[in-house]
Image (tube, rainbow, N blue to C red; front, side, top):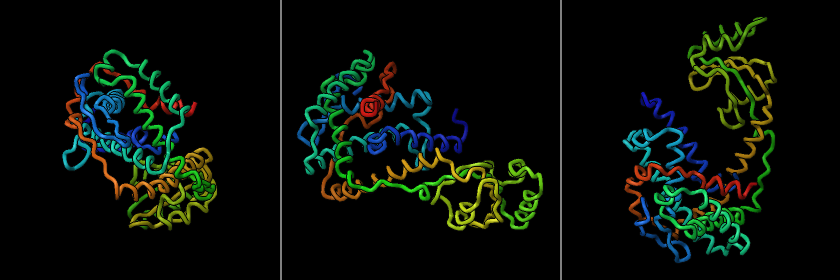
Length: 332
């Protein structure tokens, strides 16, 4: 499955994209090996994150990646320093738990609390999640229903904090700013070759895509381009083209492009990009507040879990539902 380094790095990039969906609080907002481990860490309001609570997150993410890639994934190196995916995953989970704690500390400072109704909702959600756990899940995680309820409360409160602190942020993104087009490209390293190819594609009856597949130095011929994602000289030309039009030769970073616009306004992709840009704007607004708070506040989450042995235990545990059930509950 993992035959070469390039393949591993491609997979790593996909893994990181998947990780964002489950471990970054903003994205989720919008969108103990056994019961014998009893260690805990101080949280925002004097209670503790038990190893069982941490294991809820570990089990969720570990099992999700096992489903996608099998247990071969754990020893795959994800950088040039020999870091394995197992280590990377646990570090991400540790960062997530630490940030969850910090956000609840900030919620204390800002006076953000869950209402009685919101706590009841988290209690019901925790019960529903607990009911999905098998005996093997329970043994692997080592958390009781009340611990899971408290974890959901902390998570929900962190999301409420983001909503409260960014409720006045202007999230209006214009069509122009978010616009996405679809293009086909011929990319070569020689200017004269590019000019010759330009003459060929401009000839009557020429098949641009076929010529691109034959002569372009890049394997990918067709792609989507969002406003602000490419060099200015490139965008100043291609974003003024209408559907079906072909650019002159464009020089960029020592390479030469001939571009045909296939769709000058991809409505669905543009809307998706609007949503992403709005989320980024909200994220940036919150991070300004959070980062200032983090400078004067610290949190450490110490646990034996971080040594990595838990990844290889509880082989019969399959739960992956902690985050997805929260999303479904909040966005029915």
